[in-house]
Image (cartoon, rainbow, N blue to C red):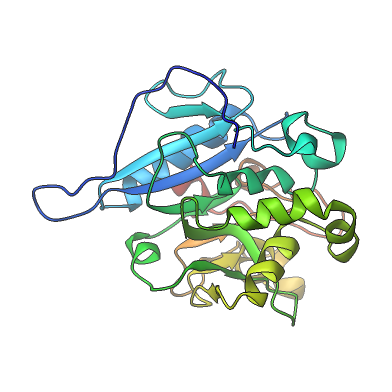
Length: 265
């Protein structure tokens, strides 16, 4: 498959003197929805909460403002015209995240944890590299079928290129069957028997699991659920709005919680 040509540092997966293998943490940023501070904060959170040797990479179409210590690469060309030419539909509903399945993906190899930008890491995440499985993902909280939430998923670089090829060759059929990227990839891999989920308590929804229920939400601040490691801020509010107590919805009040500001930095 095609890859963008750019100057990069060359890395290889290696084992340290202590016998610990380097792992990858990957994120992606495109368009204007998230500023560079989201990448910078995610890198900082990973640095504080991952004690394994790691390589942090951001795929993006705009590296302005991203900390120069962070390894940045262009969103790769994958041989799928709609993605490579950024057709309008590819910008919505997370579809460009599927470029993480490119093979090769620059010089990145090995075990990789993909993390969305709109999360807050609140505890050590080493365990995300320890569970066995070919593709591990959050079980979507409001779906009863196999759908996963791809705010956090782990895979081996190059392992699921067939999903990209299927979408390329069967675009109309694939898009008619799903609403978004996470429905597509988790349904596709479930049919292959490759889909597994993180323990429920590891990844929690800010809206569903942290905010107090009913009228309590107007008087008590959100809390970190027991056992949570990563909190996903899907939809509204995002972390900086939640820090300020802005909910983004007239019917929902968010009381500022110190733990969000303490961790999203």
